[in-house]
Amino acid sequence: MYSTTLEAPVLLVGAAHVVDVRSPLRKALAERILDGVAVELDEERAAAILRPDPAGGGAARDLPITLRVWSMVQRRLGQELGQGAGAEMRAAAEIARERQLPLFLIDDPIRDTIGRMLRSLSYKERLSLLVGSVAGLLLPSRVVEHQIDKYNADRTEYLDEIRLAFPTVARVLLDERNEHMADRLVELRRRGFGRVAAVVGDAHVPGLAGALRRRGLPVETIDFAALHPATAR
Image (cartoon, rainbow, N blue to C red):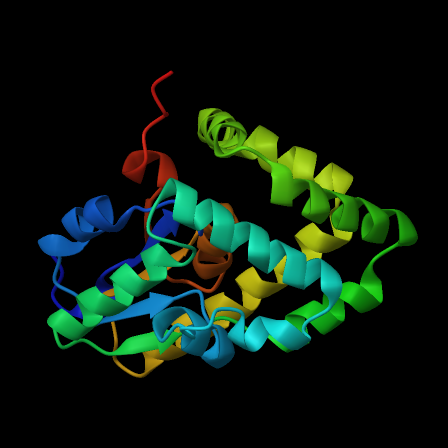
């Protein structure tokens, strides 16, 4: 189809950090020729997720309280809904290792991102984020599954609601990181890695796809809804 892999589209695969999509992810990538696999991780998060601290907590212990609580929420929901938080990133790393492909970390350093976000948050956003984090500790997994189904039903509407409630969070955690991850994927293309599958949180897929297209790269996407159909109720 392509005379060179440098003409092939970047493949963006949307995942959820607390939902186990290892099997469909493997199936989606099984028959694709790839030059590399990229993941939405930086070195610190990769160390925590790909080589977990047996004692748990690890790198998250000295993060701000809100982020520590969110880390606890992700770990709990990941265990209840699948194979623990970050299962999709571990699966991507396993696929790269099994196929002897390079694994690229394309996210910003987590501490830089958190610092930018906390410096920019309004008082209202700080309070709402803290309350939401604490509530998440008690949130039943079935409620999370319902929210996942709602997200899959209309991703655009769901993300618009998030942007309305948390504009700074959306800008720093989604928009700015999308631009930075796009730059790193462009650099991989310049280095000769044409067919790269990038596994990222699904909320990044539309913005990251747009950022790549603005930079002149073709894009193919596999949305989270394709990997994880609506939960039967």
